[in-house]
Length: 265
Image 1 (cartoon, helix red, strand yellow):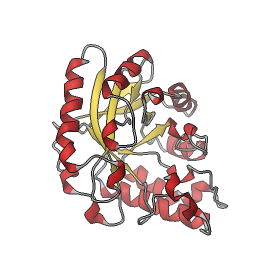
Image 2: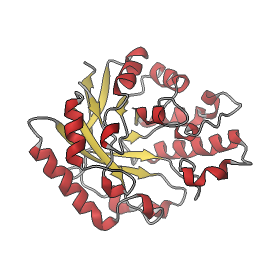
Image 3: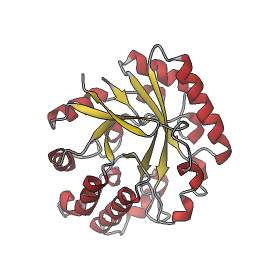
Image 4: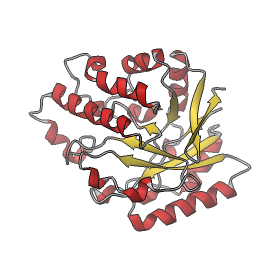
């Protein structure tokens, strides 16, 4: 079974193409379960996400496509939610979605306080920072995200490497607390191919981290994190092969917030 659960729509304001086109591309590329998980609204960084008023439109649009494409591909509906230091920014209107409305929530860290570290607009803010300290701060938030119990999937676990700023200390040590929190929480970690499109030129998470996760039998899922039609299932064969390389025979998918496992074909 080939599943791809982390993909976006034009509603986030930094993706292109119609959702229908994403599904046609997914079908053409052999994907059997395709999930939309667009950036959830919040009262911060509104430029790069849908508004709260657009949530109903988003959910209705994906449900309608799910019905229309039901005989061709299994469409799932989720949100990618930013885990924020200021808890008031994680709006309960997202977490209050009923299971019948949303299949899963992806929790991601894109901000260290107010710094969007993965945004090229703020690339200059890396200057003068101690890289190891940035990594520690990032993984402390990943740890807190997992402990919150609010999410089904952990998005791009080591996104902090996006611009290839490399720490001096072993990444497994820097991420040690986060790895323990992942193990205890039962959260699913995605193998995300988007890193191959970035300066890091590496899947999220790295082999070093994935080895630790695999040894602990941490469940995984697969994602291309597409923001355009051409990115749908791009490098999917590489993340599929990576899962196999590290001994995974099945991946997690979600329906109505319930985890299921499907075999890798």
